[in-house]
Length: 467
Length: 95
Image (cartoon, rainbow over the protein chains, first blue to last red):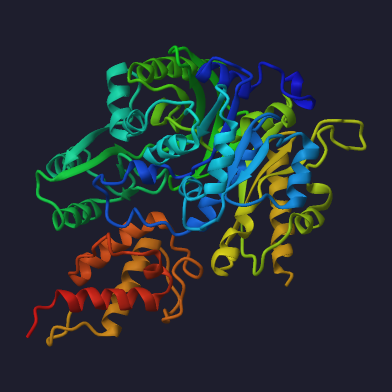
């Protein structure tokens, strides 16, 4: 990765993405980072009770700021609010965020960036002015809302229809795809009625030490699911659903054995408009109880395991292309404790957090170093500026692309903040002290980046303790 | 668990909630007060909500309408017990 300290070469991630999706590596993309698009895909679908609640929507809706890290100089990013001036200067100095920022007319903290944009006459006028035949709207994922926005903005989408995206993002779809392709599959089954779920839980009964997970087909990642640890809980779930629907009533879930893992993995590839598949990255995914907590890369995998995932990407990519999909794909995979590689637990035919690391990693995570993409959950009693954060982290902040270590090593090291808006989003929205920072800790190896993370957590916790 | 007159008392609901939370969170809990925050103080997370509802529906015999649920219901013990009592009252036939 010799390009670490230089602007991305023409062959960088964003150029590859543009070539694959619109046939022009210099096309202008308007990035729209509509996190939790699954909520829109899942509307009107049968749900597990209580999984549709969003407890931190103000924070989740501001994760979209991370999209500034994908923009090349001629690109644009739609944002819910202006980037903190200190943070914008920080990213600019790193060459990490170069595009134009277009903010919505009014940031409603409870709304997605897409819904805010649709309600923004001034922004829509600015977007219409960008239409020049080579400017495309590039959402995280495409639902009916993004189709409406593309139409209102007069910009073509750099992806297929919302109907295709919704179809291929279902966990029922991906399980059936993996079965048909003959890839190693986690034991389980798909269920479309309550009776099928009852039969599936009889076939795969949970028992202490051998849980079963029930996942909504179109649930929000890590949330639309329940882990059943014993037969009593399985019965409870069936009773809960039976109170609401008949035996032949609709249910859209997959039932899977919980596999003891050595590591969760996430790999990304791009399916081109012509059906070609370009592999991008594989990372260790850090999860707790199925909830995403970050990434570690490079992953501790043997070369043949990486090859197996590349092979799976080809197979899955071809099937997605046959279904009419083109665009970025992230797949969750699992390396089991017994060394079995399960190459597909879930297909996300959309951007994911790893995608937003691609362009910056080409610049700031050189070969031979290790990166931990992580979050810091903090309790800020008031909004904090990026300059306060910079002062709190001091020398731990990764703020120079060429590093500054006295030992002559010129590699970048430290904590790179890759989303700042989420620190203040909830405090600003309703005064509640819940904030989150997204960061990438860059260092020599896993122990080094974990030490860096721990030090940063301490310093940031002290920062938000200051009134 | 409803009383003989068909209405659940606060203490019954709180006891059921305490048992359900202990089961879902797999840990002993401090004494709950109406002000106890489920997420902030007890570290309930959004993935546990369905389990909590499963346990409450079974022990209290109520059926929660997911379309009526809002995040505010899970803000504090007081908010959740008030919501549960409302569900139980609504389920009682009129006299």
